[in-house]
Length: 113
Image (cartoon, rainbow, N blue to C red; front, top):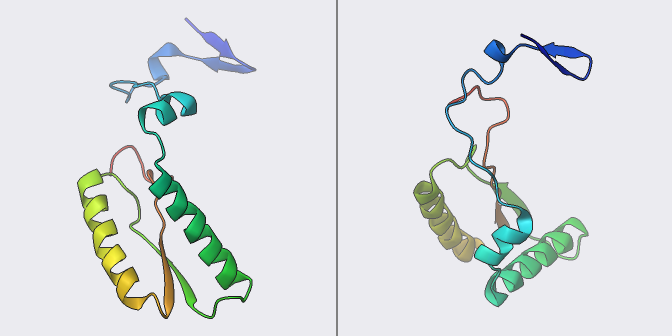
């Protein structure tokens, strides 16, 4: 038994054989309803973006430092990392603009971490 996907034959016995479960991802609107952005969060984003622009455009002499874990797969560990980084950011804010970069997946990693 074969199905067609465009010009390619798709054989059911080879499709998704390593997939145990599929969980739907909520649409952005639904997610924003469930996890609304607070005024404080919004202000942090706007302030951080302005700091980055100022460094990149030479209006701020501090060094821009973008750091973060390879990927986020443990929310608790990510939160702990963010708290520690926030403390360092406060300590060095006169010399550095520290930004935590976050990736939720590792694009070149096979199936599992």
